[in-house]
Amino acid sequence: MATITATYLGDLRVESVHVASGARLITDAPVDNNGKGEGFSPTDLCATALASCAMTIIGIYGKMHDVDVTGTSIEVTKTMSANPRRIGKLEVVFTMPDREYTDKQKTMIERAAHTCPVHLSLHPDVEQVFTFHWKR
Image (cartoon, rainbow, N blue to C red):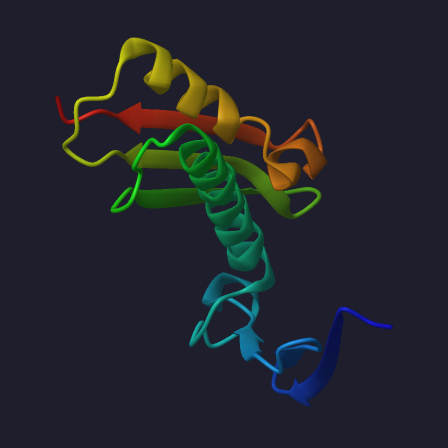
């Protein structure tokens, strides 16, 4: 059974449906690639997938080791490359909540991020930079 179905709506828009849940999303081509930029582009979703996957793996670590990471925020900057047009760089900045994490917890959280399946699935030519800001 399919995981996702997608329908081209015209005008460079695609509606995708997550089959198991029925959740829907619409992508739009970015302005710099003939679109209107009125929603996530497919490459934006790739950047989003990296951030949410890394955070999910960090959350799993936290749950398994009783380390609260609730409230962590993430900012992603996507840089496109030309010839061929592709994602060249993804910069993911994690701002961790104001808690007293031990040095070991910090190290394990940072390592966990680098084990996420999206990070490991992206082509090696896509530069991925993870930065962690610890408030204490």
